Image 1 (cartoon, chains in turn green, orange):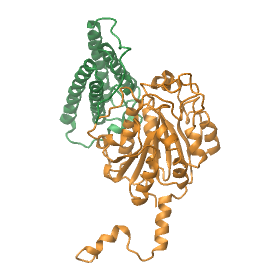
Image 2 (cartoon, each protein chain N blue to C red; image 1 turned 120 degrees about the horizontal axis):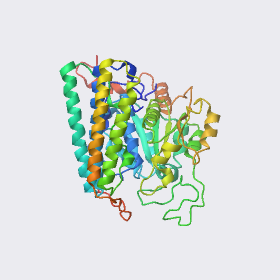
Image 3 (cartoon, rainbow over the protein chains, first blue to last red; image 1 turned 30 degrees about the vertical axis):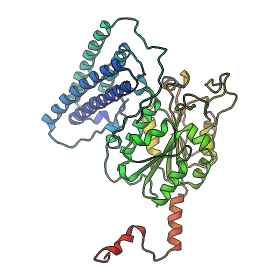
Length: 174
Length: 299
């Protein structure tokens, strides 16, 4: 489980909303990081796509955060970023210099799949019925995101792959 | 007195340790995961950035202090440990972290490591071991496996690698662990434990070089092959068993704590303080030196 320090069996709705918000926040930041990496290594197509994904994650996070505020105002948060690991965020080794748009979409698809797996597996441990409902909804959202990415993938020309001649070299000076 | 990360002063968030400088490592580099694990471990430990000194040598991985908000010193090739020891002795209240690569730590800096271990200063030493000199575009490093073909070994290396785990265990390190970014919760946990250990703590991180490393050394292979020491039923208090398991370096990828001294020895910095106290009875403590300039006389 990507949240080893979270006791899902005792998760309240407030904690669950915070957890879900932090999951989106982590994904948002990671996509931005990957976009920066792509920019630095002359891979603009993937950078653009990762920024698009970052915006989407930010929107989802903002919606969850608004829901949390509406229900629980400024009640203290018990879940922190240190408690979760790459639930929906792409793993660092998913990125490669000169990756194609197709490969970048593949990264996003795997992230939506693992996020879905997280919420569905978590259901087995959750006891609070409101949290179960929330995780059901979030799992369904991940499925709709997967469909969206698959449709985008279908629009891309086939056969596009990493340029084997391209080589990581001369990173930007700092 | 232990000055390690035992007394958190406040709750912190990982993002507090992230600097504005963006890493320029190659996309897919293992060091990104190490950095994330470090942010989380530091947040759990709870010491604020201004109480942390982060020293490194030279190499790709040695850029890491700049990506944190701690006080950083990207120092001289192979000399991170002596500099860190000086910092710790000068200001024992700091949480001092040292980082570098396998070339920096076991080749040019190899002579410093045994002395840092035997002195037992309260330091945490993170080595990002990628078995190659990546920054200089792929030459043999001290942990490169026999047979590795690189730009400096076109027919394959004819040397056996250094075993960093056995090396530090043999010199008596009180805490020895290994992790990989392929297991982020596990890596974060061993870094956090190392930071909290009162004495010299060594963490070897198998952090693949995505550009010059071998395919079987990449994170995907780690995920398939890594074995948790806890899962093997290893007792980290058993030093001899730890050495037996450490001898698998290069053949097996064991993760977790190899050795944790159940009765940590006094640290060098604590002994220095004790010696200073013994030799200077009645002297005003360092933290009260400035009190004599107060108008109320420090009362």
